[in-house]
Length: 272
Image (tube, rainbow, N blue to C red; front, side, top):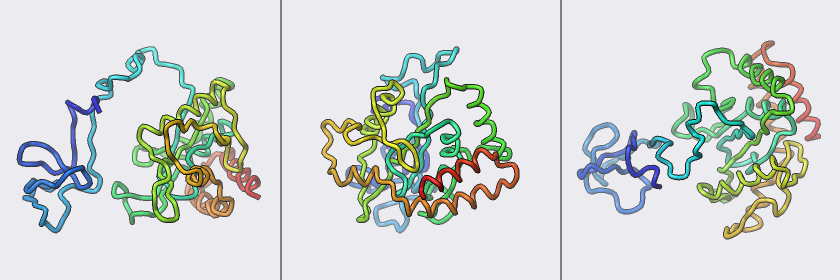
């Protein structure tokens, strides 16, 4: 929290009469009066929320007291891991690792999230967002995929390992299964231990996943059933993903790298 004590920019929040900010869901009682995100007077009796559902804040990374000293190193730093992810309440497990560079590129190229207030479309729809770059890639994304494959060819045995995370899986009752926030470092620890050769993994149809006991849960009271669900691979649900990925790839036509079509076929074979 020391990172956000100063030099912070807030957007789409409400402004309180004492110059502070507020949005729905914050601790404590709402202010008796504020200026909402549209610049209008707002009170708790107002019919519309004071803040936009996608209110955000940002602060300079350099303010983080525990940031790596190499953060601004002009020579750059070696990269051991790429982490992709998406917001899925089901299907996607907490963590899995790619079998190969090509498999990792496939994971990035098919990354998906259920839409929120930040996305265009109905909330909860599935949206493919390759490499989380859909809003920013100004050319055919099939060429972007090919760039990643070519980059891996140049890396060879020095290519970073690729992982995929999902912090947002829920139970059938709609309860978050993973606490998230600082506890995400437990999953990052497993990734680092994989790179260092200190942690094993089990093979699944979608990739390599932690063995029982591999994720450090010291001091975390997470029910065993929740952890099993977090790491469960539902083969039938993944088979249903195949057709959606085929549709996603279809928009790229002949420009889609054949190596990604092969990864899709290999996934289908592993799923049986």
